[in-house]
Amino acid sequence: MSIIKSFSVGDGDMFYIDHNSDNFSIIDCCMDDNNKEDITAEIKNKSSKKGIVRFISTHPDEDHLQGLKYLDEQLGIVNFYCVKNSAVKDDETEDFKHYCALRDGDHAYYVSKGCSRKWMNVGDDERGCAGINFKWPDTSNSDFKEVLSAVADGTDFNNISPVFTYSVENGIVAMWMGDMEHDFLEKIKDCVAWPKVDVLFAPHHGRDSGKVSDDVLKKLNPHIIVIGEAPSKYLNYYSGYNTITQNSAGDIVFDCSGDKVHVYVSTDNYSYDISFLDDEGAENSVYGTYLGSFIPKGAE
Image (tube, rainbow, N blue to C red; front, side):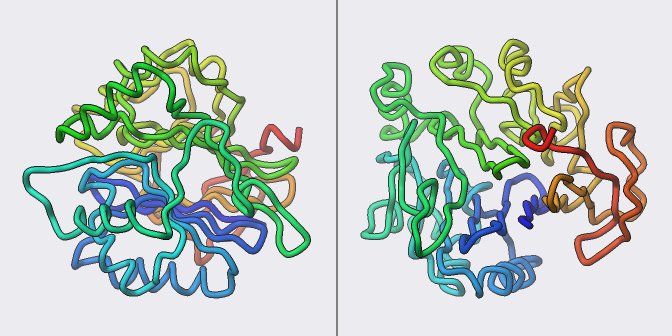
């Protein structure tokens, strides 16, 4: 069994994957004084029995790194994954400074298209792998090089976001794209091998500025698109696709058990269309209110 959790943290992103192996992955960080103790305690509890704990940073904007210093102080981040960059900011927060220290430190691992790493996507006799694979960036791509130059000048941080998947053999495939913007995606979309996915976490919190191109969506063919938190007037609701909107759902949990994925939300009266989910009769649990289940593409 593995668990994917998307935290409801306001206008920002934070996830974890409790893998069905000796791995635990945290994706981005967005915590404030109101939630940092609870979120960190949950992560410490869930990760305490795992041999490998990694932090994946999609890009150095505050809504993806707020609370990073606190998390590191409490957890001890010894595997920090990011795109290699030289981002600078005129107004450096403590969390951005901490990001830079981790990014440039001895425990950093720089991700890129097709990269491989023991226990990220290569298992051995000691432990299985995490099932994480990076589809982008291609560090030789000219458009990506332009973005790297821009972040070194203090702009365009969204577009160094990697594209990566988490997959379970014969089970779920989920994809993250950070805050990649639509206009940049249009430039590089033909340079990415887009797999079929079950769950797509919409880039840029589901904002229209991060809209995934129709031709890319057709290739991905997601069963569910998770639309993050942002003011409704900025969101793209991906008409024609099944969606769960975090503004209304709160925390979202995908319990990947066997050949079914069970979906839970922290809101107890989520009332939007869930006809794309099957009622397997699961009980409400520590994960929240049970919405329904689906068979992932890998199990079909």
